[in-house]
Figure 1 (cartoon, rainbow, N blue to C red):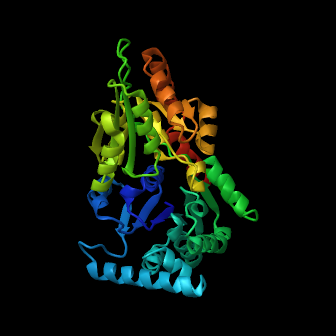
Figure 2: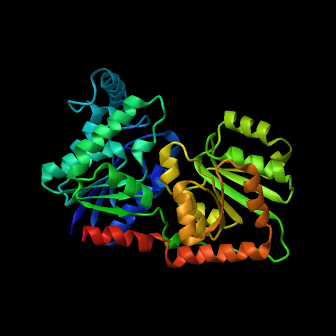
Length: 403
């Protein structure tokens, strides 16, 4: 039985992609161990549920506030020092690795204790760990680009961008493969590393068919419309401003929007003020557990995939939203980022509009008040997920590569 170690600097419930990968590898007969680190308190309960049901091994590294407090506080302090030193002295002498990940040393030590055939990193802090652990055991290393890390920084984060580029340039050439979560992320990474001799594949963020709910058809005489948007956090600069503006333009009491995710008081006040007279048509669902999202989404008509084109990562990524909506059988309205536009042209999953064009978005929403049009799109998307864009199909790319 081949052994695989998956490595992340975050928590399982914050990264459904690594959980899906662990499940697929375990089901295919591999011995899988997931090494992860504490990130935020609200994800801890969800982690417990995921890990209780997991058939693979898992290990928390670097402590957390509730238990392992001493090592947790030590690594937090060390991270602050390393990031300060990083700004002063640059990226050499393993400073970049330790400034990128709170638990670089602890993760590497844990990975070295497990002799495996593959070490696969998820998120940039795990890249050096995967490569160095693989070198230690003369094994193979892989890495997953769920995001285009060079395109995540803002104008005032030059030092962070330099660290990202340094770590990629130092370690990517030692990988046997890397995967990207969209075709454009894979292409951009290949362009940055033209000399890369390993394999590059695209693994879409599809979801498993055991999460697909029954199809929910819209009644022919029902012209109301239920819109749905979700994220881990409800915040500004996520496209919600354009969506609320479109609802204000329509001012239709039969059109409702449900938002799922963590919403702090400041954001709630912002939406309350900005929404004005259509506030009663906006509903807050709180946090929905990742594995429950498709079934929850199925009660709505249209999934909203409203991404911005900045920073560059948002322009070329494909988020979990789209694949959740497909599995749920929602029609989809997409903003025209480069990747979403290309994806919609390829699969015809819904209606698109120019980013931040509230009037165009309002027209697309109104068009789905036609039950016949809505049902045709909903059925198309449901079948597309059932037959093609699901994790069972998509994960075969990774399994074939590892075989």
